[in-house]
Image (cartoon, rainbow, N blue to C red; front, side, top):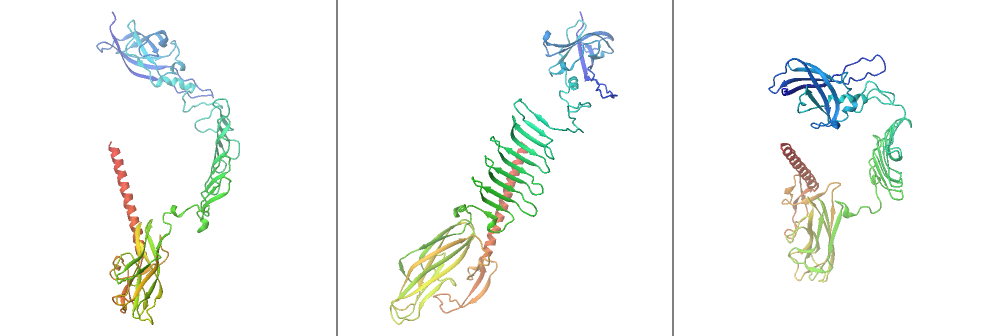
Length: 506
């Protein structure tokens, strides 16, 4: 009875030999596998030195041993062991040749039998190196020392002429065109029908075709100019053209109607109305974020005035963002019933009631009259406010009679009207006068002594007002908006950083 055998295989490699060619004929790759191993008994003790009978079989399965599973058989080989170690060249004469066809499948195992013992288990799977036999046939070759004129080398080679691909014999699918024009062209097709062309003449041009065979998209390097993107309608009619421009002439965008007429054009180098050409009524006021707008209100009735400041007309305007509100008020006073003093005051204000607000009120009337009949006085007032944020704001045209009018005085305000106009920005100084109490929100103000009376409380006295420029509020609002946007951006960046750090930890 034969002792149990075991095999320690420690090296499987292909042993190619480097040949220095002396002619243009390429050498054949060696078709042998240098296999080394060590034979031991069941206790791990090396077998005695001497000649052993070994058989090597390449199988297509790790366990099956049928005739269909055997790929190659070395036959019985006389192998000398020393300390259990041996080395053998599989495929060496007179063994059967190891042809490349044997290694086209990666499922290959090497089985070994010693003498009459059963095959050593498990079989050894053949890996990478033996499959290099197939490299001579260039099934998977990244480079080659010897290439015929029918092939292109990986490095240092030049192809002359065109190269065409047809994957189904129904027409060209890819055409590398090296003979048309000054440069090379790449033509992509579907059975001979163009899908796209990349031209290499002097400057690059890419043309994309639709299923009707029309060129509908162009990207053009434009030689000495900037890049051009042109999109056409399905029939090839011009649709849109975007020109990147040059350092001397800026970019332009032109869009065309269905009939091919230029209807929209933007020119980055033009200032004024010509910079943007749009169809008539293309943009309505509702579509513009800060379009100027107005609100107005009036009444046809008459209101008897009292010594209390009373609303005659009010208007509410809703503005889309920070800006100026310019107000115009008008009415006429009917005064009669006395030959003595008869005055009335009108002004624009945000607050209901209160007294006169110099210098924004107007006064109309007389110190004495020749009769008690009615006299009529047209009055007009205006005022400008700056509002730092979007929202709805209510303003009022208000009026009152002089507290010490003559006995029997009758003062009536007829047809009051108040109009509010929103303007998003200023184009010059916006000076106005404020009282000492009102100027506190301004950093810059100039005291001005005026002859304007304070109103009914002091009809003949002078007062000091303070001139300010409302643009200070506009600039403050712009800075606040910029700061808010900066803080929002920093918050978003911090949140993104937290997300990235959390993703990294996971």
